[in-house]
Image (cartoon, rainbow, N blue to C red; front, side, top):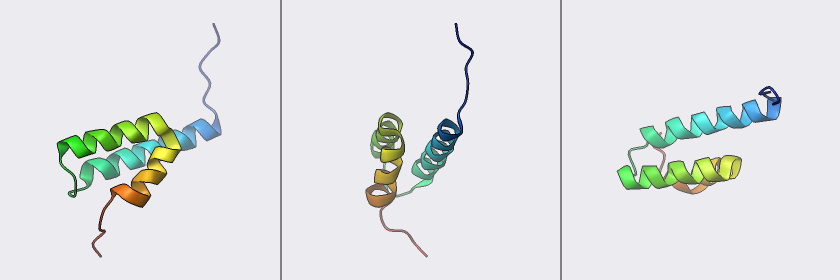
Length: 63
């Protein structure tokens, strides 16, 4: 059995997923079901899911 190795690309992908996860949870524009669906999208589509969240999921950003 091979030891678990972490590549730089894998680490970057994990950090992007965690940032996306925190952004989804803190977003007030979606209810519990919407947040759950976005978490599933971000998990199963990895970086593409994070990009989709940034483009379509965040809703209106207040300044």
